[in-house]
Image (cartoon, rainbow, N blue to C red; front, top):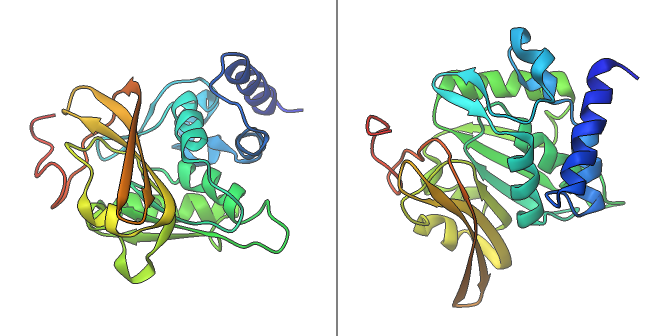
Length: 227
């Protein structure tokens, strides 16, 4: 076992013991996805340090425990169609793809992920290809707060940036019985919000406090200059 693989195993065991990781499917996905491939080469030795790391353009790859928490809360299933808003490095999308597109017999889901920064979207495409997920994840450049109506509805929607409120297009594009996970608050502190949709009924449940970069777009913050 390589040094990085041993570090990966140890951090996942720790996150499980702390209660951040609960389900076998999320544990398996985190063990399979090589986080180091989604980092700039000079930071790859820190891949399994549980902290956010810079990936350029003022953005970060989330800490491993936050990816674990959000994935557990989203509860993706084999065969799910997933929309991610905020591609970043592509790491979270790969973790989701491992569950929805690769873990179910005969069930082939897909992850659609939207990134507003073209250069970062290209970075993520290359990282996903290098890691072997290019057929399971589609990277789109655009305003993620608008969702992706041409591919809706989605079984699961995950937003990896801080929103002032839940963008209405995302609720509209959520499938019946679907689930949306999003950090909501101001630009300095948010709480993780889980939304479920049953017909015309919407349920909301708040979770942990967290800090994400701002969600920029028509139904988010209009500029990141206040961050």
